[in-house]
Every structure is written in C-alpha cells, then in structure tokens.
Length: 160
Image 1 (cartoon, one colour):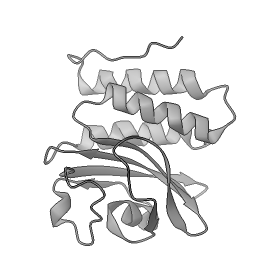
Image 2 (image 1 turned 180 degrees about the vertical axis):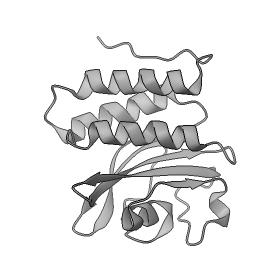
Image 3 (image 1 turned 120 degrees about the horizontal axis):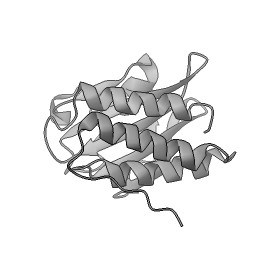
C-alpha cells in the first residue's frame, strides 16, 4: 500500500521536495509511461492545494492528446499553438498564467479554472507532452510552482 500525503503547513520548497521524492519512488522501476503519468497525476492532486485539474497531455501525431489526470472531464485534443497547453508545446517554454480568461486563445475545458501552469515535457529538444495544472483561484501559481513542476518534468522525461 502506498501512503503519500503532504502536510499542508509545509513550505512550498519542502512540498515540492516531498512530491519529487514520492514521484521518484513510484516511477523509478516502472517501465509503463501511462502508469507513471497516472500515479504522478494522483500525487500532484494529493500534494498541491487549490487545484481543480492536474494531469498530462501527450504529443501524438502532431497534436496534444489527453493523458492521465485528476479532475473533471477535459478537452481530448488540443492543437499545437492553441491555448495555454498548445502554446507550451509549441514554444517549449513553461506557461504561468495568472488569469486564463486574459490569455489569447484560451481553451475553456472547465469554466471554473481561473489560473494555469503548463510545463512542457521535452526529450532531446522535442516536446513529447505537457504537465497541466489548473486552479479555480486567480494567480494561484508562482515561480516556485513553475520551478517545482519543472523539476518533476525533468524526473519524468525518461519514465513516460
């Protein structure tokens, strides 16, 4: 049985350190990328407060396709270059969006989402997917979140 949980009183740095350690423990010996994404989506949901969506989109045949996640049903396919996820996939750069309604071309999969953090998954310079976090709170994510999820992406890149 796995029992990974975070103390809500932890500093953000410690929270991400523990999330990284839990993700490392769960994915280190597993070869199935979908299983690893599923477990990490559950860990992000468990560890990170104030989310309404946490998960992955995978690059398949030139578009982002929904992968394992926690939250409400989501958009299944996202064109590269469209919305926050598509922009991250196209640019290869993390997208930290304080107000998704002000983001040009935002795709509203869940009307409750107000802010978003999307970190591209880059393998050998090529986008293979993204990690996507949504929150119902405006400006929920900051540079510490972007750095923490960025480290998580680096851990996972050869495990998914």
